[in-house]
Length: 408
Image (cartoon, rainbow, N blue to C red; front, side, top):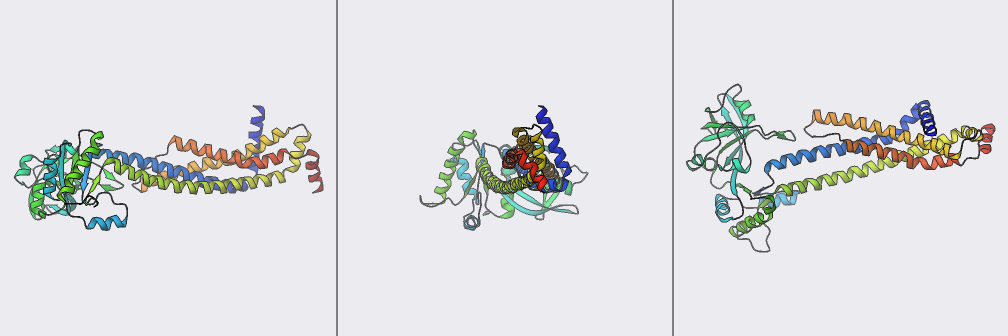
C-alpha cells in the first residue's frame, strides 16, 4: 500500500511539473472520451425518447398507409405511383377482418383554421369516432366526436392545445365556433397535451368527423387505417389478414409487391435501432482512432520521460529500489495521464450534452454506465501503452544509468 501511495504521489508531482507536456499528452484521450460519452448519452436519450413516442401508438396497433416506411429515394419514387387507399378499402377491412378489435380511418390535410382575427395553419384530421380508443386520445374539456357526428356529417371539432393557445387565448374554446375552409365548425372538445417530437409539436391538430372531411376535401383523398389487435402477439396474424384483403381488392398478382405500407411499432423501433447501430459503429471507429492516437502519444511522451529521467532511475535503483518499483511508478504515471484525460473528456461531454439539451430538441442524458466505461477505457489505455516505456525504465542498469548523466 505504501509503495502504491508513493508511486501515485510521485506520478502527480511529475505531471504537475510538466504542465504543458501533460496537457498535450492527454488531448487525444480527452477528445476520444468526449466523443464516446457524448454519442452514447445522446443515443441513450433518443432511444428512450423514441420508445416513449412509439408506445403512444400502442404495442397492439399498426397503421396501413399509402407510403409506409420510406428509407431511400427509390422507395419514395415508387410510393408516388401507388394508388390511394379509399373509403371502400376501409369498409372492406372493417367488415372483412376477424382478428382486430377496432379498425379506424384518418384523412389528413394541412390547412388554415381561424377564429375572430386569428389564423393558424394546423393539421386537419378527419377521423372515425373509434380513434379515441385506438390512439388513446384523452379529452381534457368537452367531449370527443360521436357516432352521430360521423353519421350526420356534422361540422364539429376537437382541437389540440396549440390551436387553443393560438386562437383562444384566455378563453374557453368549447362551444365557440372556428372557421375551416370558410365553413363554421363548433368546438366540442379540447384534447390533452401530447407534446412534441424533436421540436415539432403534435398539438396543432383539429379533429373532425371523417365523413365531414371527405365532404370538404373530396371522396378520393387517400386515407390511412389504424388497426388495433387483441394483443401484441396477434400483430403478425392481423397484418397478414389486412394484407390479404387489400391485395385482393387491388388485384395484385402473387409476384407483385404490396402497393401500400404497413407500419407497426416493432418496425419503427427496428428501423431506429438499425440507424443508431450505424451511428454507433461510426462513433466507435472515430473513438478507436482517437484512443490509438492518444495512446501512442502517451507512449512516446513516457519514452521521452524515461530518457530524460535516466539518472533518477539509476539513483533510485542504486539506493535499493526494485525493478518492480520503477515499473509501477511509470505505469502509475501513464495511467494517471490517461485517467486525467478521461475525466476531462467526461467533463467536456457533460458540458456539450447540456448545450444540446438547451439549444436543440435532441434528448440526451449522461448515464453512469457511459461515465464508468469512459474512465475504465482511458485508464486501460494508459496502462497498455505505458507498459513498454515502464518496462524499459525497469530494465535500466543502475551503473549505466548513472554514467549516462555523468557523460552528458
